[in-house]
Image (cartoon, rainbow, N blue to C red; front, side):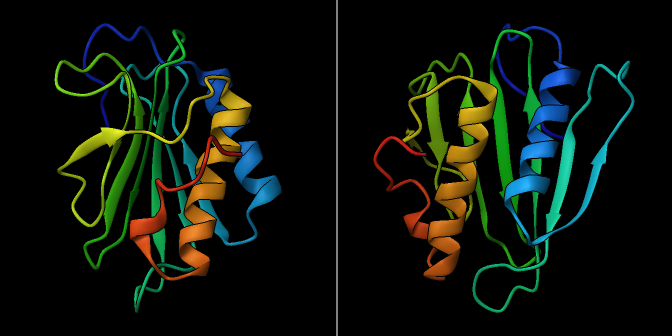
Length: 147
């Protein structure tokens, strides 16, 4: 279960539907998606992809978007790759920050400067896809203001 720290507001179900639709439209590696019940206060969108870094056969995005336009795009693989693009109040990092792979422990400024749901989603996809194509998760946060 993903969460956002701070007073981020309620989950925005309509925004999560737009995120899902953008993943389905722009990413051919999507194999499965699950968006829970609109009334679940812990709601998140899970999207599985049919390729991962190194020898990992697949990965998964767990996504949260709130009515205050705070977000959490967490990518994980069973083989241990984890990273996250976040926007939320954070006392020890910029509001827009990135949790670096492989373990998502270290927070740094995010390369994603935009805030609109459609553009953030496209930026996350571009960052992930660029790193995946080079099979190097350290490249995920190296784009210049994507998309």
